[in-house]
Image (cartoon, rainbow, N blue to C red; front, side, top):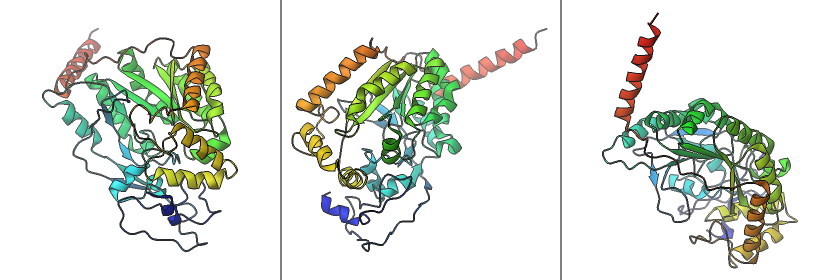
Length: 373
């Protein structure tokens, strides 16, 4: 993917309200590139979001990346209507023959058989229980979840089988499932993190157009904490010369809301994300664009992206080291990461068949007790 491919995007001055990308940059697997007529807006002013069902065969993804804290994950959705322009998951849409640009925000693939698949995989002989990270590539609480309830169905299975699960989200919709999450938390089976990238409403509107407001996310942290759900915050990504100055303010507000821990990652620009982000930056913040990209190259060893394990999340060099020091100092000041988080329990896991028998027996006992005088 080269910057020349950005010619497929609309002419300067054209943007779509409520969307991150300005158009459909071709995916890296496409053999032909269609160039729009200059000055003609090819996209509708308010393109509709399309929900596309996918009959998956599996639901749990496995990884062995040394710089992530989980080995299993579930993504109920592919693509994300939140429209965050920097999203590292955008390139995955190219595997579906969709554009990582506007298609990523408007063509949402979902798995209607997700709950059935999870039950099947958890019931396999020899299944090795380890925490499942829910919604890592794309948010499991994006707008369609309110109607579909796929994420809630998965959480109910986690509770029934006593399976540990973690969540990272930018949505207040996670509060809908506080009943399930609080019970999981009581058993030592869950932790939830809110991704808060900025406290600036205008920057949020441009950069993460369909996400909950920063203040609303802080309220969600507070409500999770009040419900007994261990809550944390991810300041991610840190974008040099754009939101990096907010690091201390975000951590302070998060701690005051009840967050117990915090983390951060620096901006990643893999494959098609790089030209999409640079196009957005030039359109939304033209006076800062050159400075932002200069700082990005400083933390990426002179490049605009570095996918190497150990460096991709934190960067390298003087600026990256200064950022780490600021983060650690702010965490100490505001009481975040004060103690090591206890690992989620895996010893309580019971396969679906056993879990169903236990639930049935419990229901029968409850019915018998209700008949007593």
